[in-house]
Length: 398
Length: 124
Image (cartoon, rainbow over the protein chains, first blue to last red):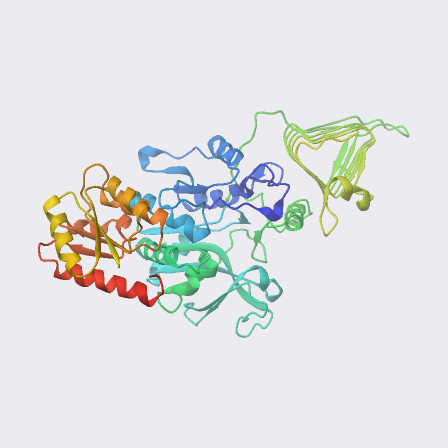
């Protein structure tokens, strides 16, 4: 599923679908889910897209066009076809309903349904083995979360055998895990369905006038008690103490999850060669730092605790705890702190940035300061609740 | 008066539908293929559709899909001599599947059942 508008990520989603939002310097959010597929050996993928899909399509063609049709492998980009409906996708279940033709053409026994906008590492084959072992109609991946997050998640109750006996969407007062009053089982939006059951249930849902046509809100609650619905406890491939799964649904969440990557020991591990994250790398030279004038007032080009992508030039400026996408240029005497700069951002001489996200191609003029006076910044830019300043694509400054 | 749209390329069968279903008190609308059916579907929305699958011009599966695109709740009864279509997911959006016969007893019962269900849920 790669069709969400990602409204709460605006203006990063001004010109792109949420799964195509850049992340971690060189990646797009969807690379994590697709890498999970590849690392799990799943090589038959239909990607359902709808809004603002140009940059997503381009990324998939550049990076993910690696499957071999001779081996019956594929990645299909499927925009809303208006085949069985004159509407856009009304919800996640409707996206499947509108693509029953695709399922009829392929006739798989099982369908794995994934969101293209979460950051995590998971071997889906283990979940599929669990699904088959339990002879389930539907298996839902779950993760233990703090009960304070219940308003953002589907909350699931299970019996001893992990059969789902209750499912509430975003409850204010959630049912916690027995014996763990502070924890809930959260729905990760990862589903394994027996295809025939899936088709039947999404057709029933499509005909229900009162439905919002969403798996979490409508289809799964209706299936609990009627079908064999099981929960699979997420086994993390991230190899850290706490299980890692994040929905970067808001700018603040995006910022927080991104900045974890520049920590000394990040929670999310990009460096495990046993679980590679694939992406498209443009043909640009390696990152470079320039100038080391040791006299007072001299220019020094340095970066501390930062991620520097290929093609970046730190030329006589300083970068602290920041993430720089390819081809970012930092000019002399400038200073960038706690910021995320996407591709081709140019920071002029003597400019200063603090807790800023600058979208692709933004040019910060000489001497410009952003992130030091939020009241002033809010007149020109998006400023989030936690004080992150967002400079959208195409903003002209100075 | 409840309206039944009957779609079949077999004209003698259409005549039979007209006769027997009118006798049951329905207003019967006839179409000889999917294209004509869609035109009539839009012009005079029926309460139930009875449709063949194998038809020239536009077959029953494509027509069913297009009808559901206009009205997701429309009950369509697929009436065909070929039971293998039952396996096709694209037919699962139909309300019922009846094997074709010159004896309309089963079909008539199905039409009544579908319409009564619609009445109960306030859709007629």
